[in-house]
Length: 152
Image (cartoon, rainbow, N blue to C red; front, side):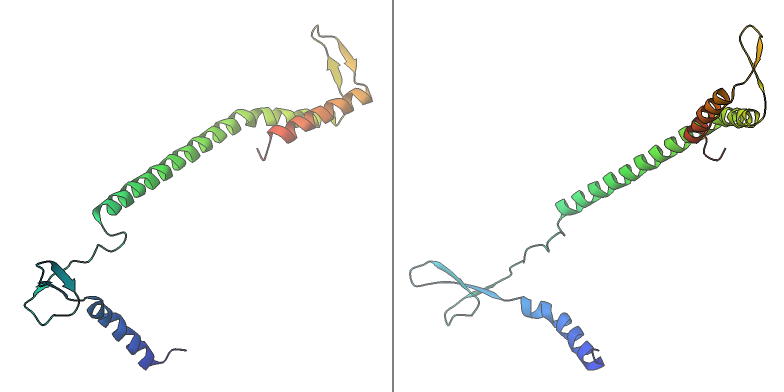
């Protein structure tokens, strides 16, 4: 665990760090007339230069513009995803509405197939159901229910 005095020492170091990071730059002409630069003042006549450090990484205007564009892109993508999810929800709701009466009919058919019944052909002729035929119809109807009817 860090003690209270160690915490204060860290805070003080952080606050004083910018002071140690800045350095004065001196400029002077040597005996050949060439400009010289250094971090220590020479014995001869010299100038103190004000040198601006580079912008902090990720703080210049271009980076901020890129960040804003990226933010707009993310917001646009989120909006698009929400719209797609809403469209999928509406489609699923429409599918369920369409299937609900068909599922009800299929369940009613299963109740009919579970007791004795007769088949009626297109001409209105009736005949008794055969056990194998009724079993196949039950299996086919149950498969349709399993594929299309969730809980409706």
